[in-house]
Amino acid sequence: MKRILNSFAFFTILLVLLSLTACSAFNKVIDSDPQNNEPPEQKLSDYFPLTAGSSWEYEGIGNEYASFTREVVFTQGKLAQIKESNGGTVSTSIFDSADDSIIRVYFAGETYHPENLLPDKFSPCETIILLNTPLKVGTSWKEGEVKKEISQLDASTDTPAGKFEHCLLIKTSGKDYSVFEYYSKGIGLVKREFNSGGAQIISQLEKYDIR
Figure (cartoon, rainbow, N blue to C red):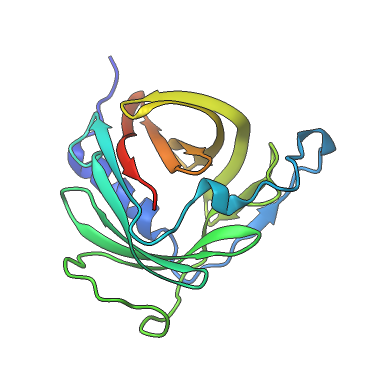
């Protein structure tokens, strides 16, 4: 019989994934296989649009906290401030869309009425890498005990918002769990699959508006 992950346990792990290791560095490991190179015109920002006013709604399966909304509320230069709500809490994140990586440099929970923190009303205290270069299978990086890697460049997946092909698939491996995230060019995250102890919890794109 499959062990079912209860809501509290999932919410706890979700918060760990959100906050991870504050003010931590990362160890980048690269697979140098030249056969997996993407064309040079491909950019990480293609898979993680951070334009002001863009929003996403995700349907949840398997847990009450799997549904969430995300909105880019403020931008300045390469920085973007995002508001996210999952029914349990509202959080604020700030991302830096660098040329070679998408980095979360700030996170705060319980921010129900976020103010504009850009550019100088926050102190960067994280280096949480969501996407990294080079864009090829095998590119990997570590943050503490968590490993992330590009596992596919041409993945496909079905969601309530439609079928998405040619997705960038990122695999996250933790001690007792794994997460698969599908990123579609021009749209961003379209599906997240959380697996632990035989249980699976899914967040999948339902609606989106890219500005």
